[in-house]
Image (cartoon, rainbow, N blue to C red; front, top):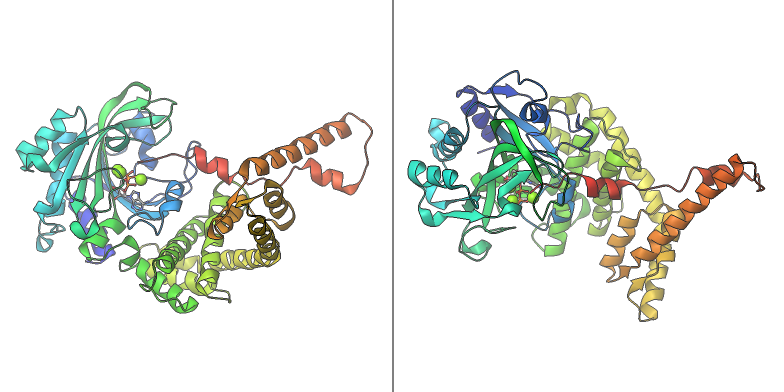
Length: 478
Ligand code: ATP
Ligand code: MG
Ligand code: MG
Ligand code: MG
């Protein structure tokens, strides 16, 4: 079953059950707490909070999502993309658990000829939140899931929030048992590759405040109504239905991956390391195209930095895989060809997307050329001295003089078997910032000081890669 078929079946199924089909919102969130849309519910947040009256009681959508918190997982797990599409059905104070659970079950298990997905019932496991007797009862008594395939999990797995203050609630996840080839048995646990989490049904009923995500959130109270927010990853569902091992092997993404293999000369399936890199390239190019398509341009902070980071990472991986020529032009064209039917705006914006991506590749290749020699030299010095830590001042020099963002240095160091004195690096960054600030104040207050041209530059402060903090403060979603 093609990805496009899965999503149109899902939308049709829920449309036939009274849901308004809502097109995907752009990735640039209309929400100051969110850098990029990272879940299907994000565009509907004001309806859940009761800030805006919902124009429809039920909605369904296929939403473009970017999760920067998953970037490190991409390619290493079978199931995390930095870009993915989340299908969802939503109820704004209309139905609750009693309908959301049967809807999801019916859609998944109805045969393909009858408009469903035809997933085998005996491979499906479900989880519910620790104290959610009601959800467990529905699964067991109304749907007929055997008690031994229903598990209760704690807050980190079965209580959903956007990771930031806002709507939240207990959830119930549906997992598919991919069999012993994918790991140990016994049912879903956190970060499971065998019991692949496919669909999350969130019973959105509370509102949370600030607080550490891991230790439980301070729940501020109830939302004005009891709502439903569900989400399944289209790519994960496609991987199951196409019987392929990862989301990078599905009908769409695999075409980008295959081109990356052809362009670099690396054979997919020949080595674990290269396979991870090829998946990263396919994923990152896809994400870059979707981001540029929605108006993000590469820069040194915020969303622009997310784009810069992943696009450059894809370029670098291609070089490591063996390609010495520019690759972005062709990879972008393939991605637009693959995704253009679902997102026609990519086709009309092809020229602009290509221009921005290709220029970023060219700029990065220059940076790499200049900095790599310095990095290699520093790395061999470190090794010769029996130390395995790249000093903070080297990382600072690479950043300051050669435009190497710290994450690039960290990645290259880790590939070379080294770590980086990040504390030292950050201290130097801080010193530089403080110096620039002091200079700016001195000049303003007429204190003595050179009037050299560099002063102005310094006053602007160092190039600051706020991507790091922006990424950290971004919504963490489980
Ligand atoms: P996981 O535990 O596997 O990281 P999650 O619990 O973080 O997933 P949810 O926030 O519950 O995921 O999102 C709902 C659904 O979206 C998931 O059940 C999954 O199908 C899909 N999904 C989540 N993150 C990703 C991702 N990075 N790439 C692809 N699909 C994803
Ligand atoms: Mg989940
Ligand atoms: Mg999960
Ligand atoms: Mg996750």
